[in-house]
Amino acid sequence: MTNKTRTEKHIIKSSDNYFSLILSFCKLSKNLYNHANYLVRQEFMQNKKLLKYGDLDKLLKADAEYPDYQNMPTAQSAQQILRLLDKSWKAFMVSIKDWSKHKEKYTGRPKLPKYLKKNSHYILILTNQNCKMKDGKIHFPKVFQGFTVKPKFTDKENFVSFQQVRLIPHRNRIVAEVVYNIDVPELKSDNQRYIGIDIGVNNLATVCNNTGNKAFMINGKPLKSINQYYNKQISYYREVTKRMNKVDYSKQMDRLTEKRNSKIDDYLHKASRYIINYCVKNDIHTIVIGKNKEWKQNSKLSKKENQNFVQIPFARLIEMIQYKAEEKGIAVILTEESYTSGTSFIDGEAPVKENYNKARRIHRGLFVSNKGIKINADLNGAYQILKKVVPIKWDRGCVLHPFVVNVA
Image (cartoon, rainbow, N blue to C red; front, top):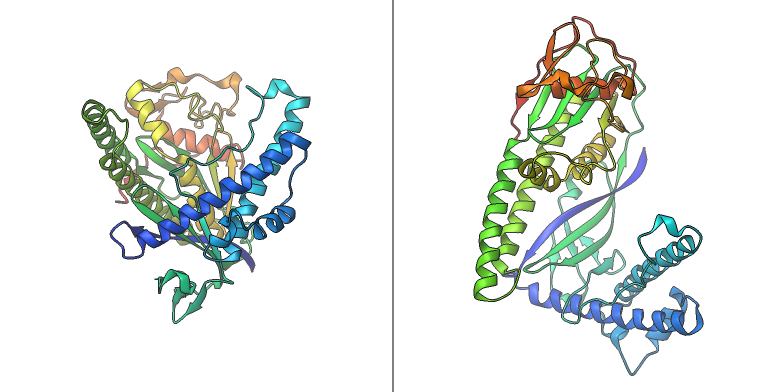
């Protein structure tokens, strides 16, 4: 068994009795961040030195004129903010050193960590030193006036320990991210049973295998429908708010965005869970997923399709598959998917540039092999993705047309 970190989300709505109190703490968090950032910036600009976390903590703890540190709910929550700032500055220092040697890699000189907006709020972090688990609930410090969160992870058999709570403010809600540890099993021994996944828009995930089982594809059209409705509504409300209030955003638009994101996240969770359940049922050892770093930047679809493509968080789906597979001892391999859509699995072609001929991919998502055999185009791509990692050849046992799965 190995120890892994997981996160569970809880939404604190604006109608909640504790919302205003927690939001005020997030405002204090922003004040401390900006005060600390001012001190670090001054030291850097005047002396070209980085004010380290330990020195910054001592300075602010003793600062009686600006008691932003003392105003925080707990000393540990103040220290967590300083650690986040310290991390940003260290990343900046690494970037500026690299920029001085390799300017061609950058579009411009890396900028100093910025101040947060005056009327904004910032994350508030409370560790297990401040929040205690009792009777299945997380009890917050006295300053929170009785606020508690009831997590679900305590019911998990592999639950190990509770770590911290991150309170993240949004326009009309606060997201409480509860961080905890679980035990995950070691990877299964390789049994030569694999699946390959091609990710797309109409077909969110097309899944092939080397076991002779029926291939399937998860319907991506519900996600397209969610996005299309969202884009239409946002366009309408943006026009109204500009005309009536001369602003670009409104509370109604924020609610629409929140609802849309929740629906998409829910669908991706169901899709990833279906895939993992399939793997467990069929004793799959390894999942191979096609992924390109420049997916969204180099998308050459139509304007309407490109909008759907960019708005679907494929990386989030892959992340869900990865951590859910990890809990079952299933390995996940990511491989770049170049030339998989225009090379023929049936003809035994390697997915390389020399064999690429996308003209064989005809209407309605069909791919025609050199032998005239028709195969679902996305399934052909999934087989070629799997072939990049695992030797797999065409035979009569390979499925040509997958069935569609609706997970909603």
